[in-house]
Length: 415
Image (cartoon, rainbow, N blue to C red; front, side, top):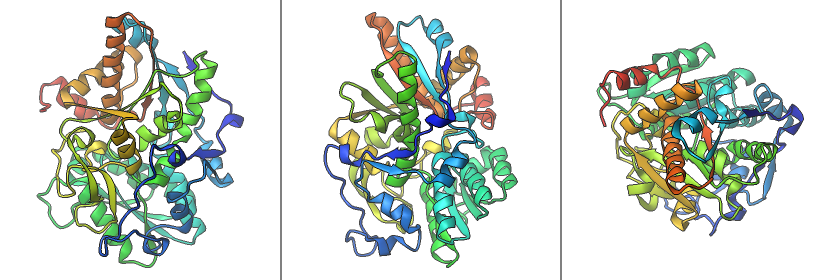
């Protein structure tokens, strides 16, 4: 069962959660002076339109027409009820998922890549640099850059660069250049922190370049709220008023924020972040100011962190291997409005395989983290004998991650 919106139902404004947060966000701090950063500090890396969105307190931010034109290539995305999974679990819960795998890059990431490329193009910037973990974000920015005629340089975490060659090939097909990170240590497995350092260093050293980030920052999560806004409309079409729980995997926070932030004002709706046990930022990290990258080139952000020098193990969910978290997500967890859980990757892939064998689709390793939590929520509903409406973000397909499933199916996957 699935519910599709018409093209006319595509949201024309993003939802800004900032006015709905329990307390105002603390400002980012300059890496050198430790004073709050201003627009002039960010201008070498970002266009002014994105800087304005980063600090906006308006409840809604209009989506430009050219951005809507590109998003309409695949949006609105379907809302699907996972009835076969429900039957396999024997649960009275009703499980719905937003299928973001239908985008050109196969994930939710183009929702922010397209506006970021557009705003840079509008400001006359011809080249973008970025990092990528598993390659989902790099693929999305490569696609968006090709649409708007920009050059794109991607620094890919070395562990993923070696694990996922087809992600690199996809980026190169859209015209991007891809380098393993860190660029100065071929024996280092890399992390999103080191890749961010490489990308920021590149952009800051060239007048023709800006830096583009696929998660963490306020404007990124803002762009992703198109997911939750559509889901709200579709749940009504399905006869559901509100979900009982909204679940998303969490590395930096983009897909989790996309599905969950529009539900923050709705009392009684639980919000759950799911992260890897090998990189348990929200469940085991400290809430403090920390750098967003390993080298300490970026502003310091108020967030849950494992320390910017933390190098997570090279698990297959490369998009979740980040030492910190979005300040927005961190603030929601700190206040108690959002919960967080962590799972080892063997349990995650167990749920991913179960989903593939019931629903048919093979989820990305990142997405399988959310599915693990969904299964546990559905089984808890079964144990209590209560109906429960579960909504999660199917943030991307795993068709370019099959080596990870091969490791799981042949007992080579280590926790």
